[in-house]
Amino acid sequence: MILFQAVTGVIMSLQVLVQPLLLAETNSIGAVGNVPPSTHLYMVQVYQEYFANQRFGYGSAMLWVFFVIILVITLLMQRSSRFWVYYEVDRESD
Image (cartoon, one colour):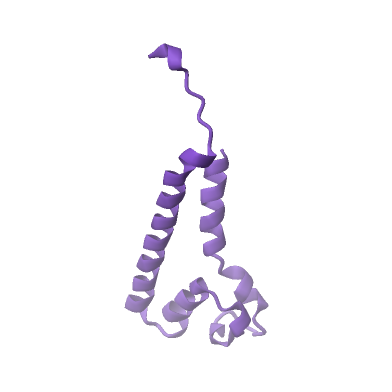
């Protein structure tokens, strides 16, 4: 349970998009180019590439890189889970 919550928590924290867009002082969601630098995150950049700049190939490539990063982090957490997650095993059933 802890491993699942840790993995999904890391993934959700990396996918933040809505909060920086809501913090931008704009009148419409289409004016995403005016996001302040303090709230400019990776997913905001992807959103800008897709919808503001209409560079769909570059935005898709950014999402593939993001997928690989999340995959590596998830695999590292899965491999290291043997040190911090306890699995109860019945040794007498073998």
